[in-house]
Image (tube, rainbow, N blue to C red):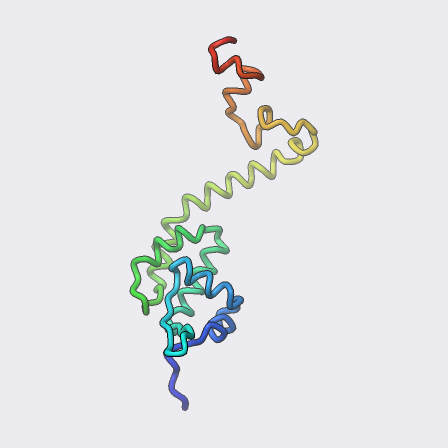
Length: 149
C-alpha cells in the first residue's frame, strides 16, 4: 500500500476538487487556501486544502460571499481543514441571511411578471427595485434640493 502524499500540485488539487486550476489559484489569492513553494517555485498544497475547497464550494452554492467564507476559515491554521462542527456553526450563523434572500427571491417571483410586463422601466415607481423611494414622491427635478416643492 502506498503512503498518502501530504502535498498536491495545483493540477492535482484542482482535479481532485473538481475545479479549474485557475480557481485554485484564485482561492489562494483570496487567502482561503495556502500553499508553499518548492525550490523550482511550484505551488504545493497540503491535503487539508481539499476539505477547505469542498467547504468553500458548498458555501458558495448556498450563496455565501467569499469574504464571509474567509471570515470562517480565518480561525484555522494553514494546514487545518474545516470540521463538521465548523460547518454546522457557520451554516447556523448564515441561516438568517439565507432566509432573507429566500424572502427576496419569493417577492421577486411574485412581482416580476407585473414589473416586466408594465413597461415603465422606472426605478422611481418600481415596487420591486425601489419600494420606498422618498425622492420619487417629491417629484422630478433638482428643485427638491433647494427647498422648492
